[in-house]
Image 1 (spheres, helix red, strand yellow):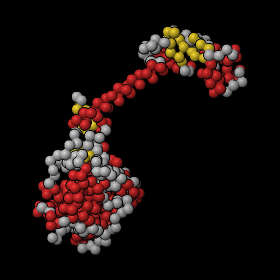
Image 2 (image 1 turned 60 degrees about the vertical axis):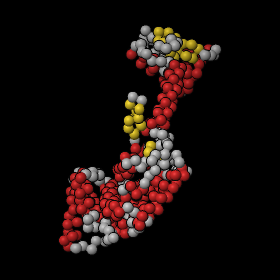
Image 3 (image 1 turned 30 degrees about the vertical axis):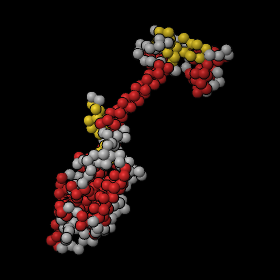
Length: 388
């Protein structure tokens, strides 16, 4: 069915004999001589024998041809021949046609990417939008926008991000990062930059319908007007620094954002502590409720203290009782809750921890506490509250 024909590429009779014996068939698909015996007979290693065969002949069957060019397909090894013999005729292309097909597919893919790139440029033009009135946005959005600008701006302010490429943390947690960017986009404070690669989007019927937010390049509402972008950033920073310029509602929104940042700083440290003890992370509504309640009476630094104790006790419980790691991890939230209750009743003087080096201060935290509220380390060391 697939009898082998050998085409010699040498005039050396010894090499021709080696090639002939190598490919000689006894009863298809079995070969007359083993590689080991041939190598021994010719005083060669098995590797050198195969190298001689590959270099000095081509083995093929006229019954097994490429379905595209109809040229006999060359066998690269005995095992390839035997496999094709057992499976019978296939639609497999020869090496040359496979290479040509790959080039065709590559060209088609490049053409498709270029077409998608043009669609993105048409769908997300960079013309300036309506001028942004900073006093019309929320305090939270103002802090988020300045924080994102600070970590994500290109040197010439022509684009911002993507979030996945920034080296400084925007917020304490990855989920909070995505929440911030999604909120700024939804509220019209960030627009998609047309330089965003097509593979970031999911296309349906030739139109981008969704995207991976962390990979998107962004622009401000000033679009490609770099000078307007520069002025907007200056005005945003100046407004946040100057409380006399704040809209009245910003004063009422400060505490809410402080608590939100503090919550995420606690969740970040909790994740670090659990990882340190090799316990699984499983944050849910219960965790959020307990940590939120904790921050009603204590600072992030004091929360660090309680979280560290809870993690230590969970790890000790795991080692002592030989329980499942998930069971041990589940005790952490309850431990924090009990500490909060006792601390309140017994009026603990709970010493605040310093910020952990594994949890560097995020840019949102810096903008909130250093630029807007201008309380610095107080935002970490004291319970979220505002006196003015």
